[in-house]
Length: 182
Image 1 (cartoon, rainbow, N blue to C red):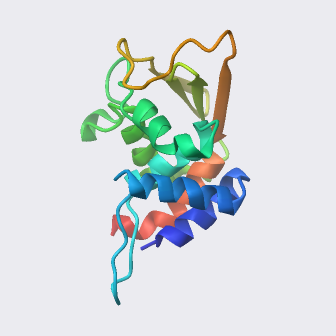
Image 2: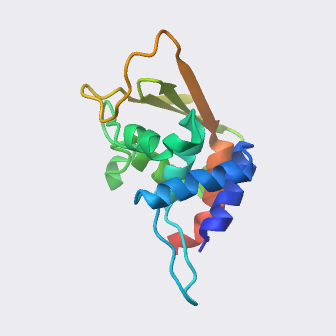
């Protein structure tokens, strides 16, 4: 099982974001209940797939470190426009769950040369898209902006941003967490 410190280090390595920045995102998420709180004493703290998904969302889409929780609360609950990504497991109905499910499944598929994933987050009005390609088959999963945004974003001019990570980050972080599947 991975510890919070190991997760922070791996997210920093996978994304190229400085570790001290990822540490602050992690603290912000823990302070707001968006990351499992560590154990005290001799118990070894461990993280969940959802903890990792939340940290990856915060690190990727936050324009300011202080907005970690705000960003996760805006992106993670975005609903999939269509059927579940993994119908048999009823997984991927929200953006946060889709990221957690990909992290959980990643060691099984991420190193296939015929395979890629692009995860795109758009802002400042949160929406997202996941593109999955296996050989000649490509699928797009859209997570449109909420009709009533659960966040205080207001019109900020015509500035827009796109943040992206790929199967490489998913694989590196998922590989760290693979012991959770046992």
